[in-house]
Image (cartoon, rainbow over all chains, first blue to last red):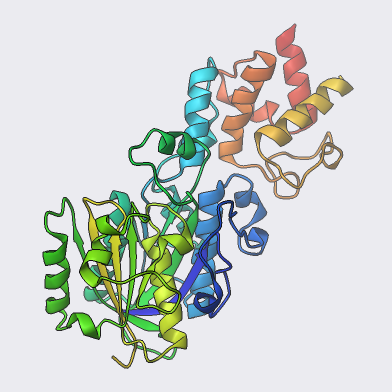
Length: 322
Length: 85
């Protein structure tokens, strides 16, 4: 399947910034979400009710469709790890503090599938509408669903992933052992995936595989590469994520590819660029597509999502020439 | 009565997240559920029912009654006054 367009709202200057992969640096300690002018994309009547995750997602989705010149995708498929946290927190607080009737909006919008639903309402889409929530592999599951839909003969699928930061996550993270060493952030990345190559095509998603409760990550990576007839040396760029990014010895990617992070190296820890959220592999997919677009010499980019040590997501993105 | 209307407008703006609307922008006789007025929708109607209970202790039990009461700020204020007596 081909990536015809990509759009990301994140803590980096990614939105409508072709070539962002060349200029972005690892995030500092106190980064903030870089919000586009949402009013340009969302009707004021809908916008007033939308939480951050909905604003980011609908805006990125609409930007994507505009870039691809696709008015109506055949399906909308969204992955989210933690869903609409802001509305969930608001609803639960109302539930605990208000006696009598509860305000309905935060309840309605607290469900994970609100994201895909709001996108469809915003563009008037009546097609297949699906939400995948599989922890850190939510985006990969959405990609697999997108690939299956294209295999059934659909032309264009809007696929993406989003997660939002709320302050409570810091409190929760402080209770974890080990504590996450990277900033908790928000992000939404959307893609128009197409079955046919066109002048809009940026890169090709050659393969996506997921492994839950992975026992032997090395073997899974090796099998994935051999399934795609690739040697390790043929992978031009590896984008990886590990929960314990500071301890290279526990890094699946580090162990497998034995290299250090550097802006020009073959191995890049994308969580340092995107910040930490469950679906940041979608950020990596946009980063990969942007790198490939501007560096045609990159033929094979592997996204190795080991953000949760029990889950492994493998996505191979290739240049159109590969 | 005027104070009640001002309070009502403040609560509506806050409760419904009417981000770009000020109290002065809502005329007392503007149709709340018309695009030519404030442009509220069915979810807002539910929010208004909750608002009446939360701030004024009034329960809207008859849907037909609500339809009439939620026409404008004037009708809402009249409804609140009537129910308070």
